[in-house]
Length: 380
Image (cartoon, rainbow, N blue to C red; front, side, top):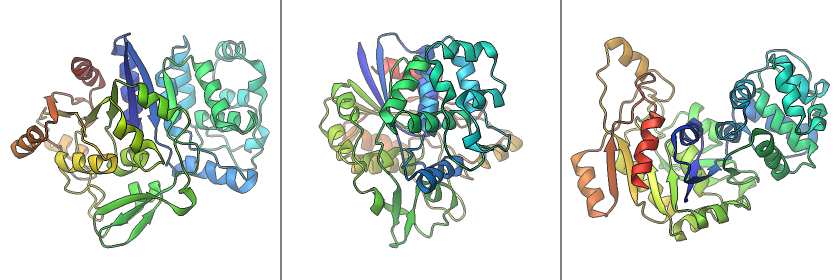
């Protein structure tokens, strides 16, 4: 049985896990290491409430949530995905609600609640003593935060419980459960703090030269299961996603790059199909595939073995091109393709590269995960 470890963050990882679950060989043993630097939107708000009212650090649940239900073997898998991803719209104090009431607010069926209560009825009555409103929070984030608080403020117990109720067919591992706030150091010396600002809000005046943990996160070391998962792996799969905030943010956690550097596993990097660019943002402005590879190798301290990228070129109508370029994941940039010069350089470095049609024709920028899984299985 081939042992695969995926490592990064964002929707790209959970979508790949979904495809591996649906289309992958039963001969694959999958562990997924998930970035834990998220601090934005309602996740960031929930983390701040934990700090202010409970004096606790809440490791961000969002990316873990998606990975957990994507690998669910439960007969209720589709319902779990629907309910855990639903945003609660009612303005009610969090402390007034039990877990069962979270599900009731998003119209979960009595049959669903009855089935999951068979696993452990007590957890449905857990409450979280926060005074703020539950409005705009996702059920999955609230469920995981509530379980964390009521299971002895032990994130590992919460994760074990989530694996149990979802019957997860794999191992979902946070890269760390310590504070993991990151900062980007620009080439001009300016510093931009926190993932949310690096990704979405900062007006850059030059490119990113380095990524580090913030001062209050310097002791962020790997989760206890990261070492064993990587050491046992036959393949470590990186990508696709935001270069600094989804991918490299994992490699600045203490011990992670060292164990990847020293593993005998083959390193597969899946290149993004597109790049991003704001008029005021230099996060990855103008970077080529080779630039992405160079930065990943620099932070890893070793060479990747296999590079996989898209070579399909869509003929877009003017209307579709406008829609494509204005998407938040594109930000007015364009598709990425390997140039002939890049191919020659990869050959010189003895990095095996594979080009294939991997575009999803509906989104026009995402990987078609079924095609991607077929390529990965050929590689492995």
